[in-house]
Amino acid sequence: MRPTTADTTPPLDTLMVATCNVLNLANPGRMFYPNQDAYTEAEYGRKVEWLGDRFRTLNADVLAVQEVWDEAALKAAIAHSGLRYDFVSVPGAENDATRHGAQGTPRVGIATRLKVEAVQSFANFPPAFQVDVPGLGPHTRFERPPLVATLRMKHGQRVNVLTAHLKSKRPKFLQDAQGRALEDKDDRKVGALASLRSLVMRGAEAMALRCLVIDLLQRTSVPLVVMGDFNDTPDSVTTQLICATTEIAYDRSARDVALFNAYDLQGEMALKKDVAFSHIHQGSPSVLDQILVSEEFLPRGRNSLGDVRRVDYFNDHLHEGRDRTRSDHGFVRALLRLQMEPQRAQQAPAPVVAAQPPG
Image 1 (cartoon, one colour):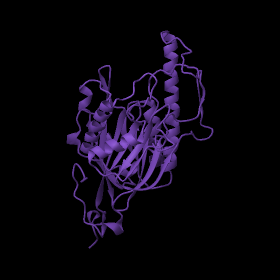
Image 2 (tube, rainbow, N blue to C red; image 1 turned 45 degrees about the vertical axis):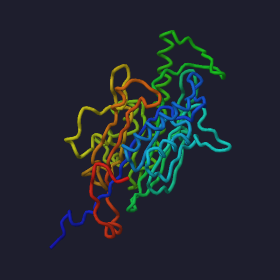
Image 3 (tube, one colour; image 1 turned 60 degrees about the vertical axis):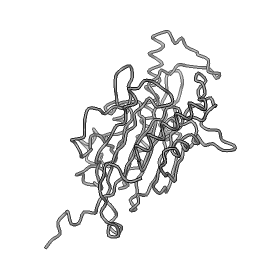
Image 4 (cartoon, rainbow, N blue to C red; image 1 turned 30 degrees about the vertical axis):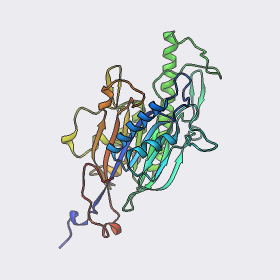
């Protein structure tokens, strides 16, 4: 009697991931932007406690974080959560005898309870992929370098996780070396040009991120999860540039290097409600913080190795008013599943799928 598909399909292992823009997480008493006061000890304590409580609620295997000025502050928030993350890294924001956190702009980082095989930060665009920005010249680097981590799940599955934070829509006005304005910010035409600069810069970063995604996906079966603050919506030109899912309709090979919004793939459709937003600007909610996945997470794809079980948005605090000891972004969490490797599946019982994995 021939075995059925159900008999031969390896059991699925769960992977909980979350992305969190933590809004200028910095040590107390240290200036991070010239026009903002440093955190007092009391403000810092409230921020660390609030974030720690949120991290504990998320209970993710992988936390992708943005807007971290001091790695030490992130570690303090994680310590408050009570969760164990053996690996915490924010390249460019380290704190030790010679390094004093990020300078000029905050950085992205990762915290995980999984085994880490490799971590790499990518500051420069690929060669020959620079873009000229009006009034600024060639744009050749990410303002906040994306971070790629290669991880091993508890039953041996390898997965790549990319954390990103693209340029904001805030107008980019010209300044001198001392930070003094070189343009009239009250001139609406100048403001339009400054907004175009931001768009061009974000588009250039999306293009460079797309190149990185291609390098990670082309001719490999290692699943990829891309998380972060894209400063644009899922249907925007910049997000679609990164995903390239529209090419699938006329190019079958494009699926190999495409990305898919996890929210659109989730299996528990009864839980999919119109509460999917991660930021509120002038009263209008939108999704800026996203979780994208490769074709290995398509439920019925040719190269499927798993699926997206559910995606949750933690955004209640956005209705509580602006407070820099919290965050102005909602946090997004996805419960993913990946097949166990056959030889390991024989050694371990099939996992129980739950809304939250054990801490």
